[in-house]
Length: 106
Image 1 (cartoon, rainbow, N blue to C red):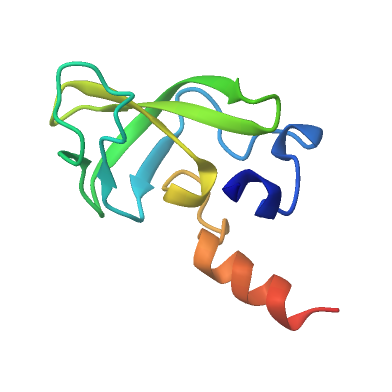
Image 2 (cartoon, helix red, strand yellow):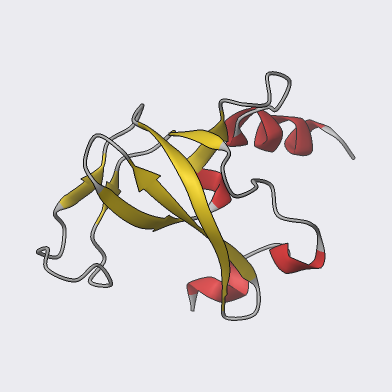
């Protein structure tokens, strides 16, 4: 029951990214079985690739899912905020920096 370990419901705050925003993958993303036409475990996005947020949806009424278009691959892959960093917001920390700050505060 991995969902019980999630610390917060993301949709209680505004989305971190907006449609049209340029983003970079900060993790390798593999097909978990939800991407049609690809084998489970096949690499969908490599760390460091750049794309654009096309749309924002939700999953389980808890999490934002960002539909990111990866121009070089010609694909759209659903991603979580923790898997992305903004390239349009120069002062936006990446997820690892945010987690480090949260761990040291309080």
